[in-house]
Length: 625
Image 1 (cartoon, one colour):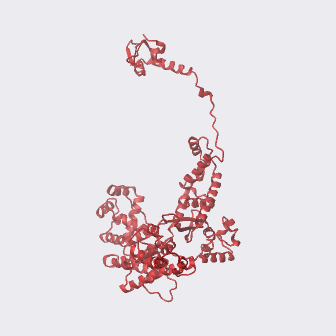
Image 2 (cartoon, rainbow, N blue to C red; image 1 turned 30 degrees about the vertical axis):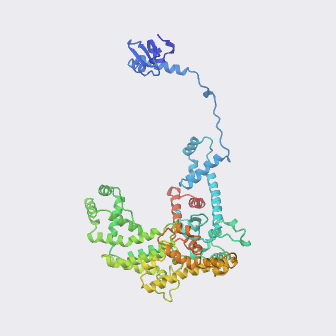
Image 3 (spheres, rainbow, N blue to C red; image 1 turned 90 degrees about the vertical axis):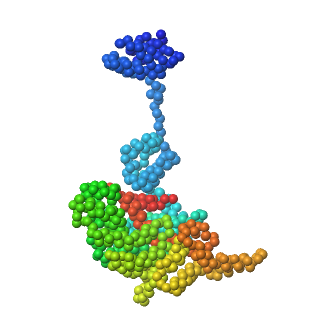
């Protein structure tokens, strides 16, 4: 018999004749109620408990005894130790790091509301994550946001201070409370590292009051340009003190406007039209003048509306075509209409007609000719959509694609005249509008003539030609393929394009050295052995003309930034021009992207955001370093 005092509590209470077999690690006992012999291992009591549950009254008594015994157990030492939790000081690194992460990661980058810091559940979450952290108030977040804007603006100014050429995009936006904002983005090439990158940052997005006239928009750009072009004049030493003054974004005094104009003129600024917006107008002109496709587009819009309003139609549609939709079209955006009809064409015609018939929408069924019309429409507009997408980026070179895209679209429309069966009028309308709205390009490539009373033609700036030639993805290949003139004019155009680049290199050398002849630069280096070899090498292999010929022989579709990153030492003259012109954005998409961030930040339930806080959130959102 084993010592019963060492037996488990269940055995002591309900069993007798307790035996312990240490060798086999077993123990045995007889039930006091039914005298059944029960066995179990030395580490468990499950068999004893399971058997005793058969005697419910006795088992209930056991449970009461167990609870009473547990209440009489000696308390642990931890019960008498009061935990001493201290909070981080305000300037503790951990306190500051968590606060910065909340503002940067949650409020700025994840678009969480500022009031989240006052939310009781969020405060509880923070106490679980780190009991020593003290949650900050919304007021503290707002003031810290101001400090972050100042820090990021200072970094931006330091970075721009080293930039030789800066391009900007400008646009105006209204929030949900119809408050106007002027947005200005800056773009430049960063050549300090081994790999060349195209930088894009928001310079300002501040409140814009009053009428949106051209003169006032130019005047109100003072703040952004003061950030971009810090003045070295003594009269402007204290100008930075007023950068955050809201009055700067109202009408400027006459003398301030004149000083701004002088500053901008000294920086040789050029204003270029938005390529994407002009392309939008071209397609809009074509669709307005073409009525043949109106009925088909109305039916496509009706189907899209049914998918968003009728559950029964949507269920039948998804039963046949799966989880796919037809996006709604926006009157002011032709590419939304293109996406709509393109998504419809991915559906089988007969099956779509069946779905419409079953759900009682026979009037929306496309006729055979209407279905062929939208096929023609997609075929005609697809290159326009591709060109629009190609020129919308802000981290890639876009300006170089303008001329190749316009000429390729014109060539595409020429070919469509013979291929299109139903929408010939649309093709002609598109081509007329394309040649009108981009006439400067067609005149520059000798495909059109300029009349004496026309003034400055749209897209006639030579930067488009320079950018196209200096992008190895295009070079002068577009002249051979898409300039629809005879070979003699093509040769003449090629020579003029080369001369345009060489004139720019001479102008650049003149600015840097004070003279345009590169041979003058090596006169000071006429010492040592075999000077004539040095002269020969510098005057022939490193001359701008030799660089240009070498470049045109080697460009065959390479990535623009990678190419110039590898050849900046071999072609220094061309490299400087390329970095100047290729940083120009082709469209205002970068600044419109800023306004998209603003619309997401100021969602309907956040419409009470002040103008200053909204501007700060947008500025920090678009400027990450």
